[in-house]
Length: 179
Image 1 (cartoon, rainbow, N blue to C red):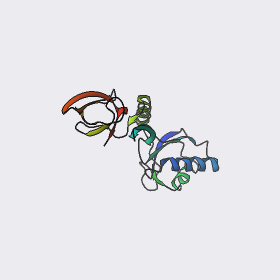
Image 2: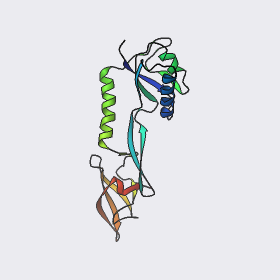
Image 3: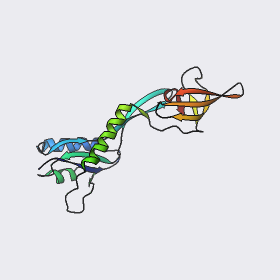
Image 4: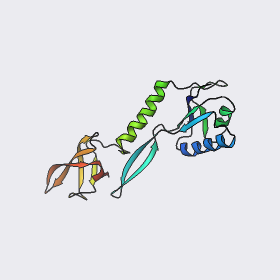
């Protein structure tokens, strides 16, 4: 039987730990012939903390793990008995899980690749009218208000009050943090 993609529902926030348990159980029970890969779709996000840019990975589809497998053998019960696994997406009680269509897999994997190619995205996007603090450059320490957001270029036009008058300046996402 050909290997297909399935979605495993898991406790949100526990995806990495659950994936590790799935990998360990597959190896322990010698079921590697049935499973090609176990995947957590992730994206890189950054956030500004104390003027420093920190980058981390977060799940692009929280609570879901993708698995490319042939569900023969003991794969279904093995995965279902792992702590934190809720079950397979698209399966009714006592029935086999429904595999993802190829177009769905390509869309999910394509989106993950696209997010990784774009590089880091801010965890919390900026909103026009939102107050921010400038953390780098000649206006470091100034409070400002967002006037325009350019997501593609990761740039902001902000209004900074200088000598009692609002001045519009251009800054990158990396030069500001939310207040």
